[in-house]
Length: 225
Ligand code: SAH
Image 1: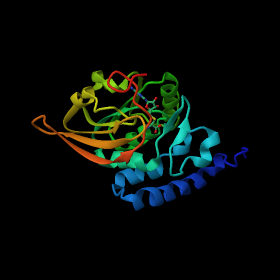
Image 2: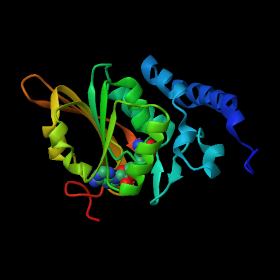
Image 3: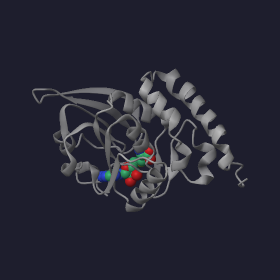
C-alpha cells in the first residue's frame, strides 16, 4: 500500500467514487445525457493526475496537473459535453487537452478525437496515459489550438477547455455544417460558456450557457503569452 493509502487494489474504491461523482455532482445538477453519464462513470479520472492527487481525483473541483494547469471540474466537463451533443459517428476537436482526461471521455463518445495542447510535456504525458488505457481513436498534437487543426477539419464538434477573449474565428471556420462549438469566453478571471451552432446555410446561432472559470487560452486567437 502506498503512503497515501491507495494502491492497485483501490480500483473498487475509485469505481464507487465515480458512481457518487455521477450522482452527486452531475445528475443532481441537471446532466441527463446518458452517454455522458456512462462515459464519466467509466473513465478512470485518477489515472490522469499524479498519485499524490488520487484522493482528490473525483472531488467537485479542478485538480492541478503539471505546467501550472488544471484538469477541469467534472461538472463543467459534463456540461460542455452534454451541450455539444456528441454523436457516436462524430469527429471532434478538443483544444487544450491538458491531462487527457476529457480527451478520454470524448474518445468514449465520438468516432475520432483530435486534441491540441500547447505544452509538449502535457501532450506527451496525456498520449502515454491514453495509450496505456487502450484509447485508439485519439490523436494529440502539440501546437496553438486557438488556430484549430486545419489539416484535420471539418469537425462535428469542437470543445475548448481554456478561456478565450472572443470566439476564435479559425474554430468557427473549421466547424462542419450542423457542427457545435463550446467555448468559455471572457477575461482571464471569469467567463461565460458559449454554445455556437453552424446551420445548413452557414449561419451561426449562439447561446450563453453558464458562468465558468478556466485557465487562459494562450495563442494567436487567444490571450497573449
Ligand atoms: N480538459 C483538460 C483541461 C486542461 S486545462 C483536462 O481535463 O485536463 C487547459 C489546457 O489548455 C492546458 O493544458 C493549457 O496548456 C492548454 N492551452 C492553453 N492555451 C492553448 C492553446 N492555444 N492551444 C492548445 N492548448 C492550450
